[in-house]
Image (tube, rainbow, N blue to C red; front, side):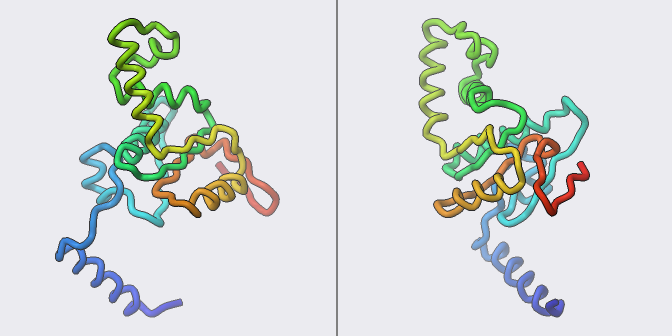
Length: 173
């Protein structure tokens, strides 16, 4: 344990950094009001988004990954629900405004096809890594550790209830 004075000193340093303009807000989620409430997503913190089915949890997680990727931030996205191609369709759709269903079905002609190709090229350059195969806590930890050796700004785990736990862990959903 540490005395409160240690934390008070660290807090004072943080507040002074904000006042002096030397501290930047956290990573944007892409939602202005949420960013204002949270001050952005801050490194080293765990944020859990929970809600009923169909409330947009996966969409917000992907949107946050897209916003971060556009800013050149390195993102590791674990998807236990959708395959990587499906997520890439959503990313291209968000980038271009094209209907994801039309992209999926290849129903693109002329200008839309050119827009699709341009969007796909941009999305491909973002430092966003999708892992649609890892299913365990241990696997997520190992992949995140490997990625963090290079650089890692954000980890998203979509559908955390499907994460399998190994020996010595208890999944209480």
